[in-house]
Amino acid sequence: MSIALRRVRDYLELVRFSHTLFALPFALLGAVLAAWGSDGLEGRPRDWLGILLCMATARSAAMAFNRLVDRDVDAKNPRTAGRHIPRGALSPAAVALFTLACAGAFVASTLIFLPNPWPLRLSVPVLLWLLAYSYTKRFTSLAHFWLGASLSLSPIAAWIALRGDVAWAPVLLGLAVFWWVSGFDLIYACQDAEYDRSVGLNSVPARLGAAGALRLAAFCHALMVVALVGLGLFYPLGPIYYAGVAAAAALLVYEHSLVRPDDLDRVNVAFFHVNVIISVGLLAVTILDLIV
Image (cartoon, rainbow, N blue to C red; front, side, top):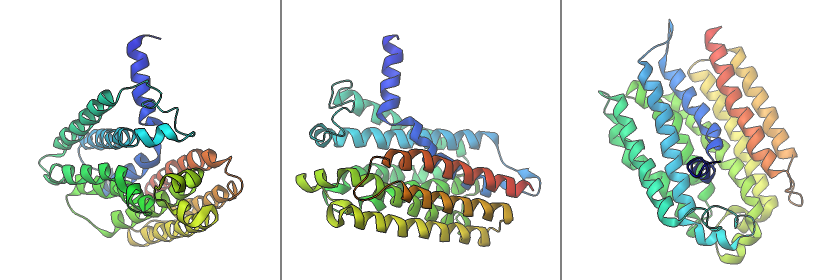
């Protein structure tokens, strides 16, 4: 493998680019709901390119900044010591430049939506909110919910980009994303409960223990289902959509069956595989419901 290709791979791995599959389907779902009309999808093709670019660049900037801010913490944690900065594969300066490049690309991508001015006006506040997440574990155990709020912006932002306003549909979809992400981040964070407690980092698992965190995650995921039902009522959507919501609820139950306070070996399966199926599946069934 050439040096250039290896470097590209390092940056993609740094920001866990494959994990874009978590939020991107919900951003696209917000856009589909905003653009759906009597003749199917309406609007300009370039707006869809803008949504893809904004999602990829904003998330990459936030993830790279997180790795930069947490580099010393990651180096001391056996689970994360192999990440790119701690092991020397990428330098802090290189990651800082990459973060700035992605942040600049995100702001520039919002120009695609002109003459709608709102994406550009909101780009810097949204970016600052996303980057601020990296500091939250230093002062609050609610960092999981900050992350949930960060990803919940994606369907709302997509709606604003296409319509220039806000309605109940994107808000309810954003709430579903908020509870979904907060819940699965609580599950994921159980892996580091002891380490967080030992170094004074804040997290719900460190404060309540894995059992308490898993119970709270289950409650969050129940609220996600409630928000999805609300979306179906307010948009409105039909039986195919509700069947998809029922399937998502079943998958969430399965996700929670994979982890126990004394057995976290399957956290990555619960975290990645199940949640990708949920996000992509909800996008697919909603589009099918609209078409039928």
